[in-house]
Length: 538
Image (cartoon, rainbow, N blue to C red; front, side):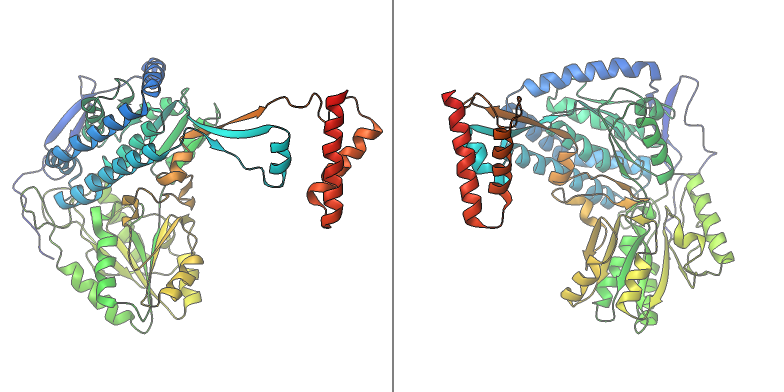
């Protein structure tokens, strides 16, 4: 694998918090300071929430036309500042510029555009059809409708791996639904987080509608606060802590946690395309993706040939600093601690029977890099097969038939995404329908986070709830049911006082709605109608 030499000497990693009580962001390639932001205090959060609620009311009081204009301005600003935003992301994360452009900017822009379209089409109210009761309800002069109203203040706690795309898309959807947002970005990428707040302010959103707070210990205080919903993206371990804290106030949560995603390659797949997809799906963002391919499950008849293709594609990847060389495909990991974790996990995998086919260690260049690594022959009960690996490590194994492939794919406590690669689309759909995951792709991998109309989330150790699309919007609003009775009748047949006459009318109502015989149902409904008419004459 070719290594791009870095021009900067790496000094010892400095602590993230300095004597000025500010949070410092470091470039994981050069160790240069990207910037610093003030650390928020826990006792500030109640004030921030009050300010956010006031701002949320101002935003909600705006006419929809003005809200659409503001969202459109946000879209234009993000387009015009694309290079600046990408460079900030690259400096904070060490990822290639192309990845910042395609996985961060593009996902953000498509989400704003989807939100504009959603807000334009969203009706103010939605009438509810009552099924078999509908005819009777209308006869009685009654109706029900839903107003979807915002929750209030949404707390977003986001990770370092996509410091723009994840919190930005969640924030845009939250404000489109009418909420305010308090965002706590990762302490490893605070500059990108604060950039999000500046974008909303520049677009003309009310001050404090989207507020960013920073600090390594502020997250717990936010989860214990009086916010109206928490959206957390991160590890399963931390997700449990967030859920426990949120339970103190019964605050609803959306948890998008880890993944151990499987990619099944059948013997009839387009093998060259599948190999290219596997390499990108496994090593994009240096494998620091919850939906990255971690388990490659290949049909035994093509296993050796396909593995050679994957190794060939991996060998071609250049690793280094994309701000110096645009041909770099593999950037840095977030810090040296992440690299050390990969070294430890590879060592344990080898100890448990795995064989390293390529990579397996940090390259001999400055920066927090780890080589794209492929491991074969690891037993399915080994630690790495079961636990999340947040780095560029791909496990490969073979299977004999479709049932075994699905069983291997489902042999995980995680259930975020998966993929099936085959030319037989019906076969692919059958296999996909049996895989336990929030999203299963056929002949593609990983990228569906960038499709804002589709739901995003998983189950099991991957969390619960959804962001994106109408399903994500429903988690950002509450259905407010309003029932209207015109008062055409002075008395309902089930009100006090109870009587033998009222009992018969209730029986007629049940029979008229649910009896199988049409004549009996009609007769009963006519009796009920007569009963209500008799009330008007009393």
